[in-house]
Image 1: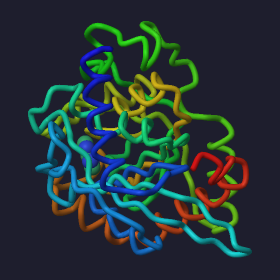
Image 2: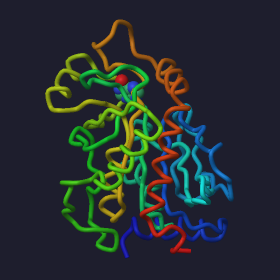
Image 3: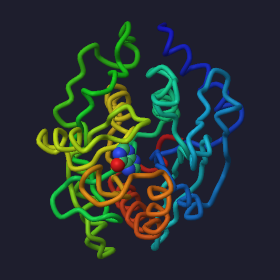
Image 4: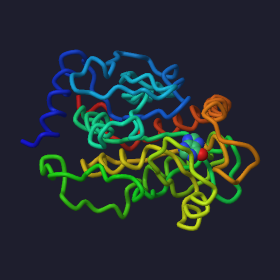
Length: 288
Ligand code: HPA
């Protein structure tokens, strides 16, 4: 067995000892979006600090724990969720394999779908602060690839295909959820940079010319690692600000967190309605 696989297995055993819950869907909550937990009937929690060898998030607004619970819809619909409340970022100084470890453990827990969310700067046409963008593809070539190093065949292929990272059926279900909830939903390509400095206006012009509509410091590497391990992926960015050079004034963390709070309700409605739709086509509850 490989080193990463051993690490995931050791973390999985801690999870099995402490938590009796089998998630169907995993949801990673981005900056300021942690309020989603109020939607769940909570069954258990597992702080990262209780998992030996696990990275602990130092980013503001990132609690650093898994929360397990059931999302209850109308007509008795139920989806069992694990929330990753707070993620670790490459800019915090962790090696990339540590950054993606929490996402890999989610796959080992049995979740089939990974729903990634984040706060991002927007550079797409028509975007405005507070709008939501469904991620249809990503640009990750400005950050280190999380699969660098010896490949562990138990996890996935050495050269995994990335031509459709974001699952088409999940995308369709998110679109349908947005229509149902009457939420304006943009779509586009998310570019991950390392941070922690925000981009320069020249970098944003470059990214826009490469086809990006949103830019941030997370998500794409988690998508790569989870896709490598066979999960179905989807994602939504909360555009908290126009990217550098596209509006007057400086970028700040305060603006990002404040705007994320302002749209938290809309974002939560979209994510909830989407996940309940996923539940209709997943074999929900059959894995536990
Ligand atoms: N750039 C990078 N990351 C971000 C931004 C941004 O403009 N807004 C929120 N996260």
